[in-house]
Length: 89
Image 1 (tube, rainbow, N blue to C red):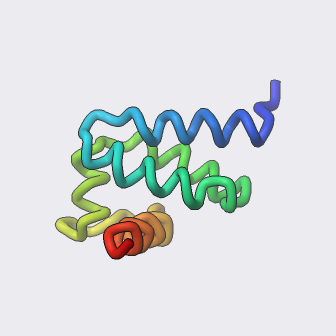
Image 2: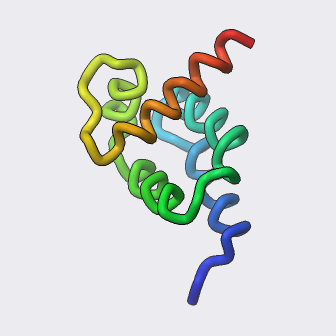
Image 3: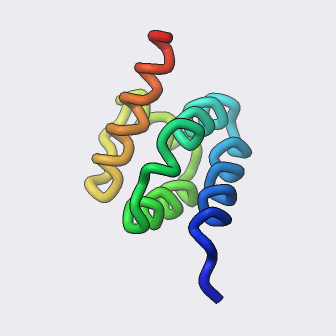
């Protein structure tokens, strides 16, 4: 059974807001609110994979504390830029 795009985006948004640490709830929640609907199907696949990663690793990648795996580099860059833009508002 194929998941409708609308349902997939809602599911990913929910997973973005219900993380293991509050910082990632905020970072990924904002990103999903502002950018998720704009992603193509391939980018949604990658984002879905990213949500399976450990929150502490995700936070370190987003904050630049550790190097981001190549697979996620562009996506983490987008998330980090969105985080910085949200902080400026």
